[in-house]
Amino acid sequence: MTDTRWWCQPTPIGELGVVVGAMGIQRISLPGYEFEPPPDAAEARDAGLARQLDEYFDGSRHGFDTAVDLSMITGPFCRTVLETLRQEVPWGETVTYGELAGLSGRPRAARAVGTAMASNPVPLIIPCHRVVAADGLGGYGGADGRTDLKRALLALEGVHVG
Image 1 (spheres, rainbow, N blue to C red):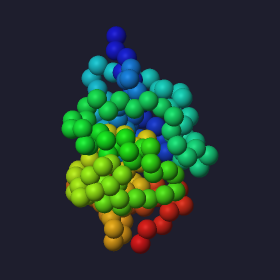
Image 2 (image 1 turned 180 degrees about the vertical axis):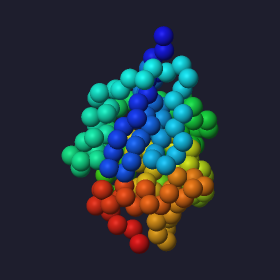
Image 3 (image 1 turned 30 degrees about the vertical axis):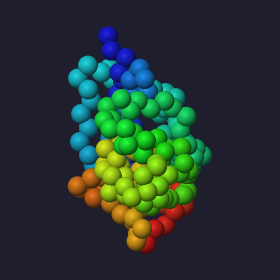
């Protein structure tokens, strides 16, 4: 028997695929991206996390108090960037790639921050949508460039980026 659970969570932006393991949340798949549950996982909703996601989308929750399992993230800088983002950039605020690089201890590593954002396994929980380019919105969602999702999530938080 596995400790890993998964479910699909309906939200105002579309359905999320969610995977939670013994050490915490492992993955959120955003709407429009392929979601393949782990083969050894049980389909079972984590009621606490599901409630937190619902509260985030209805605007009554501005942060998540759930454990995050970043064990699949290789490279200490990438993990540092993700943890720094989660701790330092609250609801309704944004940070540029360069600013996040500085907060993470490597002020000239803005491109590496972009790589870290692309490897974020738990968007929303680690709010990579809050990281913007110095001259505007910036990308989101890897090669697909789902800036529509980024704009929707920022708008949910009251942020409008040109």
